[in-house]
Image 1 (cartoon, rainbow, N blue to C red):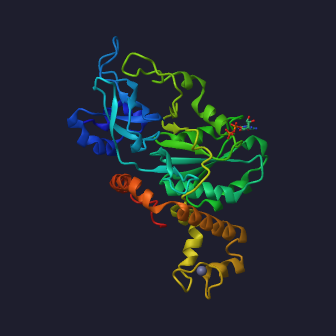
Image 2 (cartoon, rainbow, N blue to C red):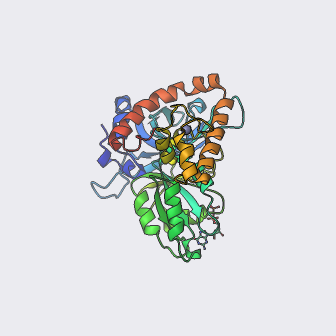
Length: 373
Ligand code: GDP
Ligand code: ZN
């Protein structure tokens, strides 16, 4: 069995839980790998190379290589997935099975009849970029936060462009209040301030950078990667037939450790299946709601509504209460327009596999992020 500590895939987030999830496939000769890019029926998968390269020191870590593998389009693989790969078939490598996902970002599509599209999987940290150079839009931040929580990822907020703001103290406080449980990292890609702390937070985990256009995501990615890193790494793998793959990957190794997933669709994820995440973003409202007279109180005009009472006394800000109601309405609308039958068909298998994976992950994390449901 592949021991996590020995695998060069550790740099890509491989750990003992992934090793356990992969274990059933090991006897069949498949190898584990992580998907770094997907396009229509094919994907690029990073796997451990089987042989030491000529001239490498004895005992040197086995290097990695990138395979271009066939995958069943119906499996809905996405960047970040861990998979079991058959490297040997004559026609070229084939992905045989995805490992159960720990987390996933899904965009519900505009079609009434289609399953939400999974944009990226197994992201531990969702880094939400918020620019300090413009007025804070806490409502938008709350959307991103609920999306992050509902994906299963831990959100952190990167407050960008601190070099443009003389005093960030009250801005940090506002953001901390809007996102209970989310770490806040003020950074400047221009001065370099705060980058070390953020890089340390990302180390050893898989992250993705979300946020509105213009907040400084590309600049921050470049600052985190450093220039030399973009040239190195096993980017130019071969497809098993001697050809080199040169396409841009969407999963990048950070120089201080950790993995960054940067897929085009994910950055500004527009639509939301954020129901589950609302409870965490608005945890203080959920706590108030426990004291409403009716357990299914919608906090409109019900008698003895603890939430409305808190708005009245000013304990709960009106802005935050409106933001909460707006997001609730939107997520109910998205849920209602999605075709239930089709969804069930397509996602049953994934959900079954996911449940097993998530359970294992939660146990590892000690369930500390689950209490607010
Ligand atoms: P994205 O759309 O989120 O990827 O944002 P970009 O990375 O393209 O940045 C948008 C603009 O903000 C560009 O003009 C950047 O030069 C600028 N910018 C990004 N980060 C910083 C920063 O830390 N400080 C300052 N002053 N400008 C920044
Ligand atoms: Zn109520």
